[in-house]
Amino acid sequence: MLFKSLQDLECGKFIPGRHNHRSRFAWEVELTSVARAAAGEPREPQLAESDSGVEDDSDDWLLTHTFHLREDFEAHVDLPYDLTREEADRFAMFIKALPFETE
Picture 1 (tube, rainbow, N blue to C red):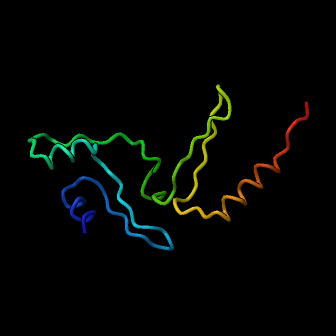
Picture 2: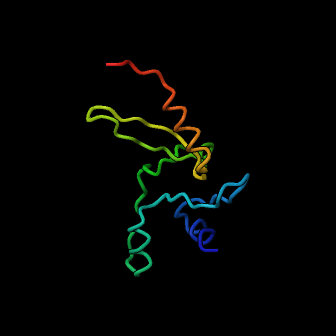
């Protein structure tokens, strides 16, 4: 399997699916470094900055979403990678039920 080979090359970590979650690969090097190595360029791979939304191995099934609500405000929410439409609808109903001041 490709991801297991990439893990053996220390490009990242293969995370097998479990509990109805899909298998995936958490990159630990910049993808451009992998492409350069595949093209035969003799360069050390550069470590990837942590911008995948995955905080750590205990939360490897979560994805952090950022929503720009206003120009000066961002909302952040962690949701599972395999969020279903039913779950999204339930979450939307929760947001709609929050109390707001009337103008």
